Length: 336
Image 1 (tube, rainbow, N blue to C red):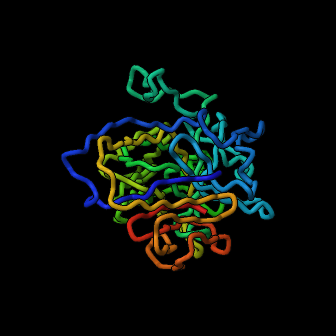
Image 2 (spheres, rainbow, N blue to C red):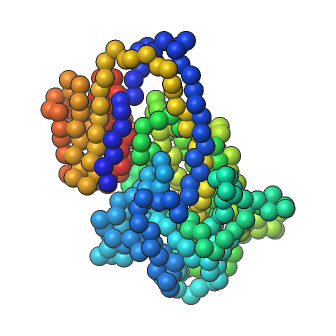
């Protein structure tokens, strides 16, 4: 898939009085995915889950990073599922693609989340949803979402749910995980990365054990993301108090649906002083720049990996992950 984004220009290029904003909400709907989604009849898993050629799930403005090693029957990041079976299993490696709500969330005709009489989201077993697996051994940001088109996006909300594998590991134990006891907790941290690289966080606790009671997230739970503000990227990390020599014993999965952002489009803007364009072709791994004297490739944390005055370069030699291409007056976040 080819991505094309216009340069992000500095504010000094514009006259404030000439700006006007048009806003629209975009809610994740995997039935609109531009990545073909078909599902395994037995497990509900997206059939591309173990396909090494599949590097993302694209839907509307969203790009969800997906990685796999087919030879080892391993995947991480995001995949998709239509499983509606939340039963306890003896083979969770095979059946790791279900959620406790037994389906995805319905949308109203106007694109908003459908709610029942009690204010809970309406679940439909035929609606696909995302399953995420977090493993810090695979990359710094293994569960990552970026945008696949230019624009200014403000975080609004998302619905999260526990994967069945994680749920029953917390409740009953599933080796090497043990059942939660007093003071145990499972946390999901949602990191919002602003255009200037700064970060804000929203922390969710899907499961905790306190005062003899286990509180555990079984249905879809709305999470307010408005405090993250304008974002270029969301990435997700997880942690558990049940840990061993190799890190958390609790399987670090969660399910996600109906991520919503507010897109702001500026209209009536005066022409910029200079125009730079950055293009990334995800299939060939080629980056091309126009109207710039040099370009740099950086890690998501800002480490410079490459500087060049050439108009194009290839990133095939770099490992899978999220990178930033920067020119004098523009930048583009890309996922390899």
